[in-house]
Amino acid sequence: MTDKILYELDEAGIAVLTLNQPEARNPLTDQDFIDRFCELCEQMQNDPAVRVAILTGAGSAFSSGGNVKRMAEAGEERRTNPIGTRGYYRKGIQRLPLALEKLDVPIIAAVNGPAMGAGCDLTTMCDIRIAGESARFAESFVKLGLVAGDGGSWLLPRVVGLSKAYELALTGDTIDAQQALACGLVSQVVPDAELMNAARTLAKRIAANPTQAVRMTKRLIREGQQIRLDTLLEMAASFQALVHTTADHREAATAFVEKRKPVFRGN
Image (tube, rainbow, N blue to C red):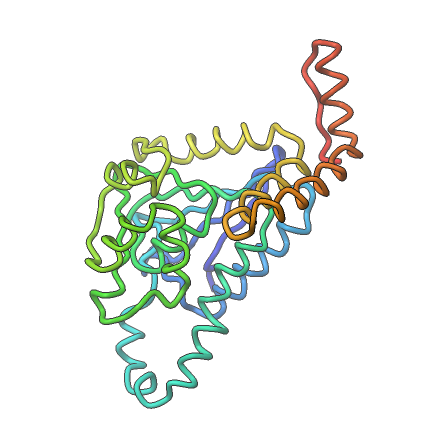
């Protein structure tokens, strides 16, 4: 059976995760896919060789989100078993945002085509989003008479702001890559053929920095979205005390004084 998500790690410490069901436009709801995705997040978290990650889709779509055909087939069960449906979401797609929230490795979404519904929300679970010109985005749950069961109502306003999040979620409208750039959903739009090169170029710039400082910086920004300033300052002081002990910090300071390029080893 073909792997539903591919994983590769290069010598620069850049991991590439590829959603690999192009014939179905890379849906996110298969349990074996979710299990594997969460395993890979944990694997990257525990591997000091991983400096940064890129998430993209195989084929012409980033992700279609939920499998609407299977949703229709399961309609009667969903209607008659709400407790089971609640468990389906909690044990299924809701594990994706939780796995990515725990990940200290920076992750870039390279959006190579449509990112619809849960696929759109998956991009917001990532730290940075780059879009190819053919990318399309839609918070389309209301079009199916649904709500964002994957955390999109929490994620989207933090990316595009409250007013734009309301607009996208309440209309379900599709926006193109340039509109996504204008509202801050993505930070770059590049020609489709250059998308992975652009993502790798950015990843290399991140990977060139000391691993522990990068991971802790990501964690501070994440936590800063939901805790008080004084709490964040305490956390920052603790993290700073830790990175002061690292060999990479000593190397950076020494290289600065000696006017040479530092060599970081991730410790």
